[in-house]
Amino acid sequence: MNKSFVREDEGDDDVPLKPALQIPPGAPNYISPVGHARLKDELEHLVKRERPQVVEIVSWAASNGDRSENGDYIYGKRRLREIDRRIRFLSKRLDIAQVVDPLRQGKNDQVFFGATVVIGDEDGGEQTYTIVGVDEADATAGRISWISPLARAIIKSREGDSVRFQTPSGVRDLEIVSVCYQAIE
Image (cartoon, rainbow, N blue to C red; front, side, top):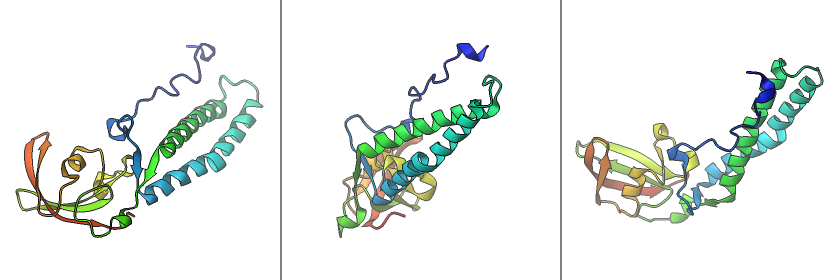
């Protein structure tokens, strides 16, 4: 199809978020101080460094003439749309961000946002999880989102409590072994 009949900005805002990244409507975007700083740094990098570089490349490529077969121009415009989409996303997330510092919880033995929780299962195994914001979740590092099913099951429980958790393979009984609040790296 001829490029002159295709809208370049098609689908900019219609990209749906993965369910794991969706914040419930009306809920704040709870985030740790480290996660907030990381998002701000990424936004600043995109606005002050990466976007101006790509704009310069697109401008140069546009000055070369025929844009329909100009790879630098086509790729640059596409990359510029990706950057602008990410800037909008980060700006919206930071606007609704509510920074929660786990170190301010003190000696709390109840599970809330920012807690590092050791969970024992029926088989005698133990897992350690830290409850973090949606944008900082990383299951391989043991950081789970506060809206994840596991986090929702254990929030408000205390050390020694037993919790029933529905998994795809069936119901599991978990025990809260320990709860502590420490800096999230």
